[in-house]
Image 1 (cartoon, rainbow, N blue to C red):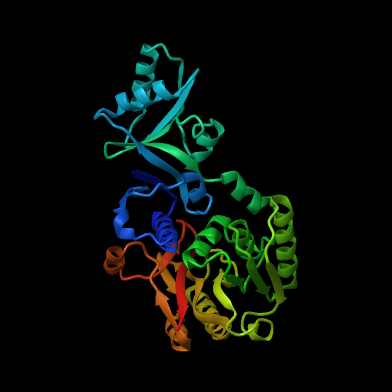
Image 2 (cartoon, rainbow, N blue to C red):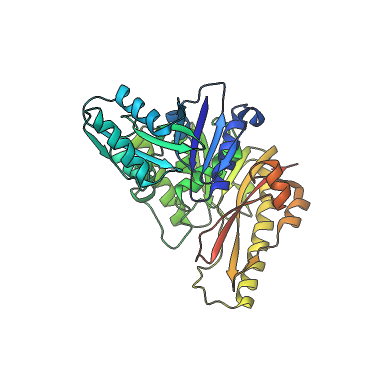
Length: 384
């Protein structure tokens, strides 16, 4: 069976997350024959993929569909599928390698069969959700002469509630998007019974996403007492609202350099964190100011990793964001990787597919939007 994954705004990050999920589940990536086509990933799987269950784990995939029979004429095939599987008025949408004319042609043929039809021009997954097109089996994607019917879409309302509906927040710190936090957790490839730590927990975004994914042992720390209070409030809110209960939930007011005073050595399976990334930028900072900031951050991160090495278990991992700053269309980076490796860590590649890694010569993933002054570079470190 062929499956379609519609990727998020930054496809390489979405693909890396999918690869991590499949590897975590013991799937040989080569058997999937993955093909990246624009904003989509197409795979082939002998085993059934339960789309709703799969997408509930993901942060970077917008929708999942599976292939339906194509007689050679995609329009005629969709008309036949809708006519056979729909009762009453038909509402449908079609996207991918199509134009508006494709939808109009499908509508015209269905009308000729005596069906009442509405063609919906969807702009995003919200349109699919609000028109109940997944339940109606009537959202289609045409790609390379394959037809996919959507089986599941991202829970955009759930992400929104966990982002904007939670009681504790601080606009001056972090602002890690819940979707990115979830992606980072998945990139760690740890089990839900393992112990996960965020040593810069802020408002608790990583911890609440871990909890919503079913993680049972979560630990947070932050130098700010307000951050600890916000995290406690947000985790307790999520527990009550969605009836979630971790086995252990520990919070410590501590800087990232002195964690050993609070956390036992060799007790953490994974660290997932967006650290302090410096003072907020306006975009008019000179190069010297940015260089000074990157030097300060480098020292913080190096000393933090000395602490991480003591509390991580052998082969434990850290999914860690290291910022880079935009100045006159060039990046100013935080130079700390070599020192982190000397402490006793190796860098594990995150960029999708080995052949792409070799071509690009990078092991990290960059989360960045045009016109932003700060890019989030995601790295995966393993304690050796």
